Length: 149
Image (cartoon, rainbow, N blue to C red; front, side, top):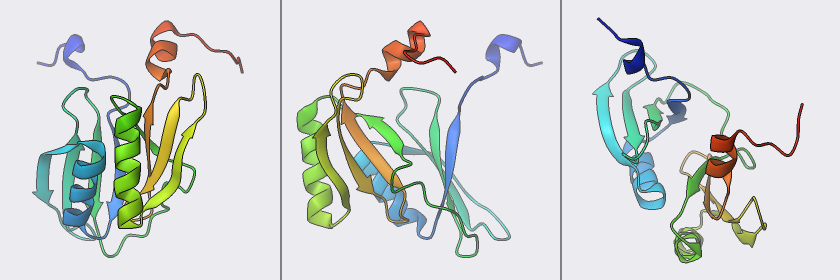
């Protein structure tokens, strides 16, 4: 019997189609600190599936390996956002991305509430934003909004 308090509510994952699961897994381990928490073989148009998570929250990046499925990459502006520990971590990840030729946008200080951020391209053209100082947690938990629909 499932108890209502056991049901996970809210956003749980984002699924991305990838061509090479191992390469994408290494990217998200390196740049987002994610670890594989589940992997399985699939069938049909999908070869393998891996769930990547930071183990701090109930949210996963689901990598779906397929050489058949076409998908629209998340980017160049649409992105996954990753909070870093400090500006130095943003700078370190941006420098590594630049060395590897995958830096989309160098670090920018957008001021509050946007913070300090950079964009990095994953192997399939999706964009990962690494940032420090974004105030999403505070805004979301308080329900505050500077704009109303």
